[in-house]
Image (cartoon, rainbow, N blue to C red; front, top):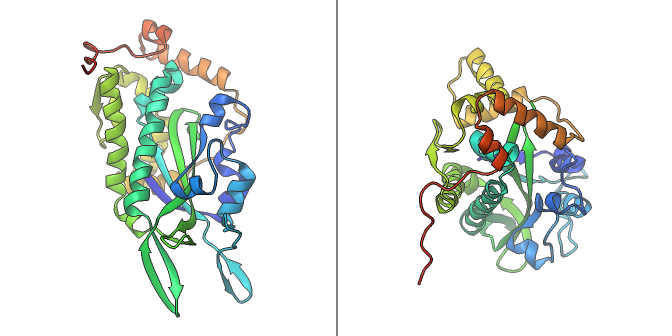
Length: 308
């Protein structure tokens, strides 16, 4: 999981749905853009994220009608929010997007929400000014949008989700005050492991074999290494950048390299055509044709016994 402060440009441009995948009225797409948080629930925000409403929240317009921010030399300044990006492993992305195994996609979604529930319950604090003194305290709830995506900038299969938290926290007095994100940054590794452990547990329940990769990611044993390499062009770009700069590959360095090397996103991608290309490349790399034909990874070993 990587973290970044949300830029005003990204907030205003509809960046999180710019691929044209998350369109209202299409069931699969609507599952890929969902509201999250206790404050969102209290404000009546559920289901598919409405672009206009989300943009208002990122701009600081609270559900109770206030406009957040501070004025400097007559100009309002407001930090839009925080972006937590949860990425599935390359093998999980291939299983979900190339094979078309929807169970992997839903497991990713569930793992993201499990991690975000911990973020909301344990690591979100808020700050406000009282009698000229800045105070901090626990938050009661957040408003966030979770946006699932399916391609890297190099058009490799890449299953990941942006969990975008608006800079407004419902405090214990029922008021919206500013988000303080120190604890989220401090506990990034723990939040990452909560996501991974949840996903790993779901794979175990499905009887899908897993292994931990070099950086702790949960890889699916059914997807051969040769296939992973074929769909790792974005990772290769990042590694090349790190090597050029003489940097060791750490999560922080990789995130900075990703920002430094990212290309423009591809809009209105024909996903049927893209998936056809992916499947052809996967077969050429040695993916089992029967596995591709089934479109799902079979259970390894007996199913768990139902409770009596």
